[in-house]
Amino acid sequence: MWTVKVVGLGLVALSLSLEVLVWVVRRRRPKNILNEVLFFPSEITCTEAIFTPSLHSCLCTLPHGVETSFSRLLCHILSTSSSLDLCVFAFSNMDLCRAVLALHNRGVVVRILTDKDYAAITGSQIGVLRKAGICVRCGVKTVYMHHKFVVIDGRLLINGSLNWTVTAVQSNMENVLITEVPKLVQPFIKEFHRLWEQSDPSAYLRSGDQNPAQNRNDVALFS
Image 1 (cartoon, one colour):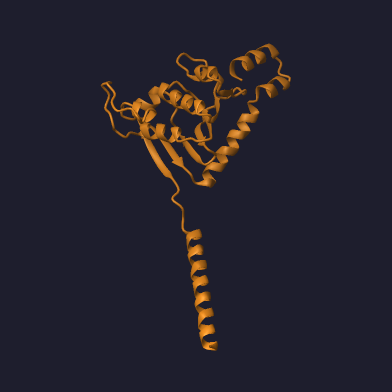
Image 2 (tube, helix red, strand yellow):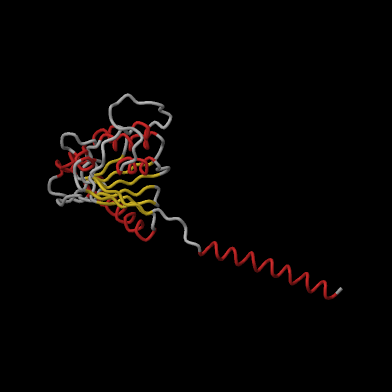
């Protein structure tokens, strides 16, 4: 009887040890972390199916069902579920504007930082986004706000040379890196937060600038 008990306890201990070992192995196993590189210019294709997956056919003459760098970029942006923080120098691409508006209409919290001068040029989509109720802030310093990065849901970084313009997407040699590596994503989250606070229009008015009238105009246009 004593031998049976010892053997039984031994089997229980072995079973528990195996469970602990499996748990440790699973914890140490690297997760599938997204790392992707996109290069531009991108082939011009139809994007309707990306915006409307239920669409069965489209009558436009552009190629259909072709995966491109731009279609991959759109898919990543439209995968946003809770928050999108965008820091971009120039924004005139209407498909990217459409994607951001779609997120806003789904209840995603969208914040945009952009350059004050380029926000007002002909073709800029910044005014369209602001009219839709999306919060946009512009840099208050004299230097260009030349960043081009996006943080999606606080976990996914899209960063590179690409401005959000038709020329950049279709005509320029550009690159975009997409990653979920936390040690790369976190500094961009921190930088966005710093620039967002720095560009707060109410703080700008309180700064005691020598041209308060111009300050008020800037706040009215870009806050």
